[in-house]
Image (cartoon, rainbow, N blue to C red; front, side, top):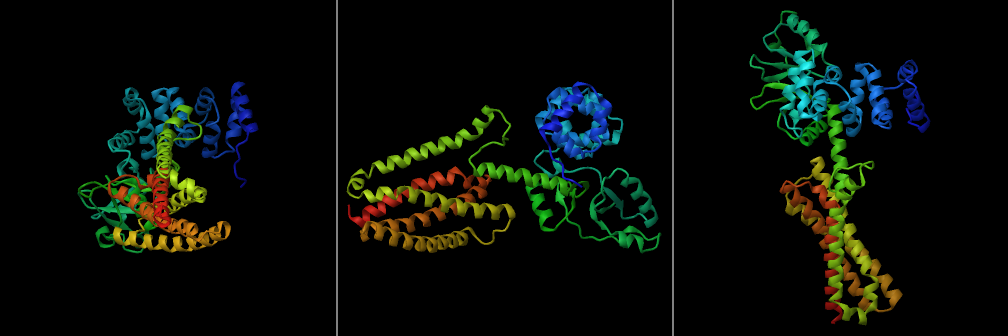
Amino acid sequence: MTPFKLTDELVERIRSLIENQDDEQLRSLMKEFHYADIAEITNELKGDEATYLIKLLDSEKTSDILTELDEDIREEILNNLSPKEIASEIEELDTDDAADIVGELPKEIVNEVISEIEDREHAKYIVDLLRYDDDSAGGLMAKELVKVYENWTVTKCVREMRAQAENVTRVHSIYVVDTEERLIGRLSLKDLLTVSTETHIREIYIPKVDSVNVNEKPEEVAKIMSKYDLEAIPVIDEIGRLVGRITIDDIVDVIREEADKDYQLAAGISQDVEADDSIWELTRARLPWLILGLFGGAAAAYIMGGFEEMFSKYTTLFLFTPLIAAMAGNVGVQSSAIIVQGLANDDLKGSIGSRLIKEILLALLNGVILAAILLLFTWIWKGDFMIALAISISLIAVIVVAGFVGTFTPLFLHKRGVDPAIATGPFITTSNDIFGILIYFLIAKLILGI
């Protein structure tokens, strides 16, 4: 199968077909594409063109397309659909995706859309899911699953499973509950097929089953599913009742969104933005950290101003100021990036104290090696051993402090409930630039006896 590639020619062709209302040709063309590819095409269309395409195609396909669209395009399309048309799209989706779309609708039409859904159980499930916080396992889960009761016989179990499976896109696991709907285990298909039809489920189910609480954070759910290589995980409420399941496709979205967020924080972008957002939205996201960098640079300049006398006597020190600042920023970002990655993957072991000691020793080793190289270079270049020694010792101190700050800051932020990814961006770079320059001139002043 040839991978889909979106081209300007394809987009223009589709626009031309829409403009000419050549529905037959347009339907024929869309049959060639996966719904995710059609979503990619639709994102390039204007609002009225996108709406025309969605109304033309069958709801069985367009419902999946809607879940893949950019939020602003989806919002514009939904605004152009009637509550009945939206309901027909919603009915084709799993409850988690359906609830996500309903949750984006204006409050005044949500009830109208829900009332237009013919499958009342589906509508009930959507209403149930809307009660959960988006940033929770409950807001992520779907209600579709296969469950059996411990007091059922194998015969009844198989019959009920067939009925339930009709509404489940993919059956990952069969969950076992007691008479009060509490999750107590899972069922092996092999065991189900190799025992007597009159055997009760309580005699063959597997009591060990991983689950998450309905209030668990999505990031924690992702860690559990990744650790145990799970394709799906059941969700229970506060008293252990089975209320839904989360599948791997939802967790992939969580991981991707978290990675995008962390990457933007590390780059000094304070809000979730995309390249196509407005200039004002992009400015609001970038400006706060740029202002921090501006104040940091001004503070560094102020510090340097206090050592003007030393500059006039030892101009060589001035030449190495950018190197010291750059090394401080680089080491700080390296240290914080490793810690943030470890926190995200839940790989960090031991106490904060032991982690700091390890990072300081590592920074000291790197600092000594780099300082030795710099000492030799500066001594040969300028012919002044004391100047070279002052710069080299300053470099060691700056690297050690930068390693400490880069390690301690994300650990501290994590303990305080703040996203530690913020520590890998301009915050660390700016703070280490200031500390680095101050340490550099103080040590140089001390060694050179100024």
